[in-house]
Picture 1 (cartoon, helix red, strand yellow):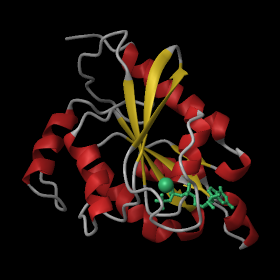
Picture 2 (spheres, rainbow, N blue to C red; picture 1 turned 135 degrees about the vertical axis):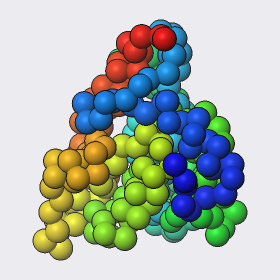
Picture 3 (cartoon, rainbow, N blue to C red; picture 1 turned 90 degrees about the vertical axis):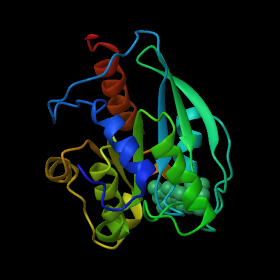
Length: 208
Ligand SMILES: Nc1nc2c(ncn2[C@@H]2O[C@H](COP(=O)(O)OP(=O)(O)OP(=O)(O)O)[C@@H](O)[C@H]2O)c(=O)[nH]1
Ligand SMILES: [Mg+2]
């Protein structure tokens, strides 16, 4: 399958990742060998200023700078948390609008998810700009990456009369979706539960 948006390295990675699709109960897929004590690496990606670093801090207890200035994160931060009895490594990445990089920061994020071992990508979007931000979600899915979508800032969206139906979105995209207001920790437990589902599903897959 061609990757329409990326260069050769992406196509290669896409092929490698095909056997690593995960099963959240949405898709039947073949899982690759996965040792029982292996770590899970999860990258938080998304446009600038959507709350990736705030979420990273909540998930890992590690502090990285959170500000209203887009482009605050310029390099990858690493933290971890035990989820479902396994060590889960979270990576906070610089803002990225698309898998076709324009800025150096976008290149850093893109290279991480396409060229290094990332088991799951959490795409964080702003509920107020869902339409345009879903472009990257579709690109990530098309690149055969396992994706979990976080629709963040539902507190602000609600003030504007915007309500997101996470179940319908999950059905349409074929990936898990969690709506959140990270600033108030709304949806955090649900997100951790979805990550736990992923960790369990992949830990228990049988080697072939
Ligand atoms: N109202 C509201 N504000 C939020 C929410 N999540 C994050 N924020 C705020 O959004 C701003 C940006 O948050 P960051 O975590 O720095 O965003 P980022 O995605 O890491 O941004 P970059 O590093 O520039 O890519 C901060 O002021 C956060 O407090 C939320 O759910 N609701
Ligand atoms: Mg950041």
